Image 1 (cartoon, rainbow, N blue to C red):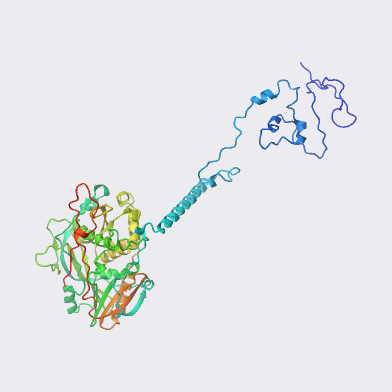
Image 2 (image 1 turned 90 degrees about the vertical axis):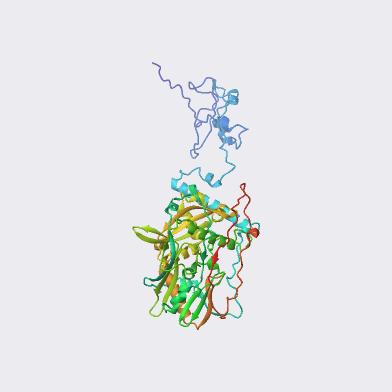
Length: 568
């Protein structure tokens, strides 16, 4: 068994450590290297290391940030000691290489926040990473918005310029303004009315074709034209039935559903409109002018991007209004069962001539009791009916139209199947006034269902040809709750306007929505005002803006003029 030999330990009488002079070249201790230096130290010094066998790294002159130049560390450098047989010599040192001593490269692209201050941190929680991604997405969205508004304000895109709205009627200097009512006062009004009673129902209706409820963008149907059917937009005082009811003293206030719904939804309106008010004796008549904007349908009225007023553009406000009215009339007749079977009411259509083909419409003359002294008669319209449990349910038919997906940002052909709620929400934002007026008209007529059709252009630049993508039905009162349309507030507005007009003297007045401010004004006008108004006729077909030429020639591309007849 090999024993452990301690050897002779020399005594140093002069201090600590081995003696400075050694007489023999033989090591004092076995396995003790020669020429090992001894670094003197005091008891207050801190010992950083005992021995460093990697001094070649620190003493390498080619290494950047060389930290081996400290002379106090030379006492621990054993790399030059020849007593280490087969040790670290210069030849082996030159062939020795580190596998990877470089710091990881920093990416040249990408957000810098991901690579900053993350060396000595714990990994982020997942929800913190999600929040960080959301913040970065918000920054990117804000940047895109800034670039969009910068480009928009540059003047290179006149299509998106904000239109300067004009008054629907020219205010004459001899008119006397009597009152000015801001919309903020309308929103605070509330009034409850009892259920109405039907005085008379005129006209005839065709049944609704239920196959249109199954239309999807994949099996769209072409919108047809009904050139031979006449549509009537007769004002209140030109209605022979209302004249007869007024002579019989059935009520004191008379109006139509389109005029009354305009009043009810006035706080949602942006475009200017006007209503003529005639006080005759103790009776009050709400009328519209010939060629009034109330006969047309606004498009994107409440959008954040108003449409330009240039009439030569197919996407101008005026052109789209005419197109929307044309679509709405044809849609209301196409979704019917046109087999010749009609349901006729007590009296025929009061505006149709003998042998004249008219559109399917029923007029319900209804009376509401506003107070003990005031009753209101309104001519309400329904377009169709359905048989439900051997009971005829009245329907109103209206069509929303898409002219260019770039304006709304929602492509109906792609979104109607999967995101119908998003499409409707976008329409409620851009056409809040129009949809609210349709809902109010359906409530006034006590319709059991209101059908909304989604109609779009065959091509964004072709405003003559359209297709039906979908038809959706809603119950009017439930739908009014969804769009935040308060029926008590609607009747409160009507009651306040009626009470205000009942205090006026006999004569003619006009209620005008201000084109720039949310308010209405009441003017006293001469008795012969609006009787000789010039009504602008539509342009001939050969002068209208034509759609782009197609391969088949598009023989049926000519647009039919709106056949709106009013009985004088």
